[in-house]
Image 1 (tube, one colour):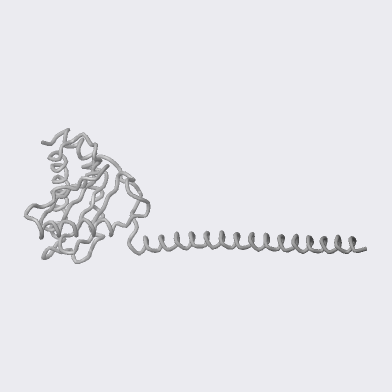
Image 2 (cartoon, one colour):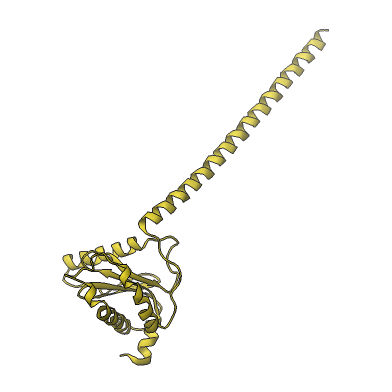
Length: 209
């Protein structure tokens, strides 16, 4: 496998995450298709995937090869220091073996370039050093990544809090408007009731006369 067919398969990759095995930290990400919900956190994605693989490795004898979703397939490639996670459209016209070959090619380039960055299996938290891999990846997948960058957990929480505050303020205004309407209706009703009572009294006085 390889050649033109491999290039075609590599082009099908919609998202790539590279996680450090020891810490589970996302060292690198590149997104080619806006397939996620707005504001999703990279930390949430990578933490979930890392925890899932750890669970599978501890609980079962077989390692997870991929996760099948309704519209996406998530494939894994575990190497000595890092885990490669690639998102592929579920309807992509390629076999799993072809896609795995493409991911291994990417893994080989990454591990060769950053071999010296890992001491005792860890990069020591120096994530920025891996940013340059974006240039290497462009040559492999033959397409430009999106400028979209996922939010951190803190950014996602802040965004959620702002949305909740906006929603709460919206409901508060609706309640105030409703209460104001009810108050005005009550005033109008009381006014009409008083006018009706005065009219009845006048009519009774006329009858007595």
